[in-house]
Length: 457
Ligand code: ADP
Image (cartoon, rainbow, N blue to C red; front, side, top):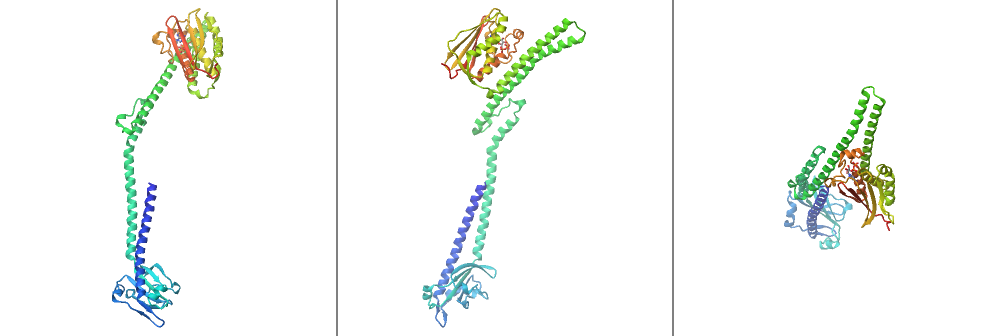
């Protein structure tokens, strides 16, 4: 808008000055030819000056209403002749001005263009002045031209102003019309809040150009809704998980305190409280682990790790539990180290979780085999057990948060249904995947695919 204003103003000023130049040039050339015409009619010798003015020439100067004036002076300023149109006025003259120039002056308050003409030699010769200095002053009332220029200036300013007004209001109307669908979209987006995340922009009602934008907004809301619902479900499940051990703690303490109890009874109550607190603590620990994994991804330190070491370490950690249940763990020997690129603590957590499941859901005197192999781009570690297995219908759900196939068995062994979700998150962080194969009643094989580290042989 400002640029348009500057362009129009500059253009207007240029037009005004060129018109004003044309007008003044026209007046000046008229004055020049009239002065030259007068000069040819003056004869001047040493003793006297004579004028051969014909009536036709004088006609335009003699009328008192005429707008043309002339005055012929000697160089000392003495007036030899002047037009009747000047009446009692005189054209301004100073002795120092015995030269040729154009000037705009005020004659009795009226604007007048004056041509002060001091004829050069050849004109003087031609005008028979005999070389004696004369100044021929010709003037013209230019009130009409000035009025014309004033009118032009006014028209120009008004035109610029109206163009500005029209383009401003036009621009405003057009932009309002063009932005109306955007406003509709933003109104709908404003309406979408936590409580009505399912609201969507009606793509059909939006103009073609904005349909892509509306669709991408809708897709973002789809993703947000899924994430938000998942989060809501997670909070509900977590509260539910913690509620059961919490109510055990409350009821056991309440019963124990209701009246005087025997030492045995107190011991039993405290044991129940401790077990429930243990379950809560394990659940809270896993919840924290899950939250940490989804929030501190960027700050995890990644390095090249010998996977065999991690496996050996997790076996060492869980051996006491396996021995307790008479379960044997066999690591299939390897001839070379398998390098992966990852975070040491997370990988240790991954393998201890998987081994823990293989022990928990195994049969007494059961077996666990751990083997490692290379595949294109990946190191694959398979943990096979001879346990209870997972029913086919549950296979795709066991990685969901809080999902347990057999709730009572899982709870008995301290399971929270979060172990495999944590494993999934860890593997995802490492750009890998988990495959689970199982036969209900005879065993499970969990294969972990991890990206190969650079230093593999
Ligand atoms: P939990 O903490 O209950 O073990 P997980 O997320 O680790 O939770 O496992 C989810 C469910 O998958 C378990 O409750 C169990 O029913 C089943 N599951 C996991 N690993 C095995 C396995 N090796 N053998 C049999 N069932 C398993």
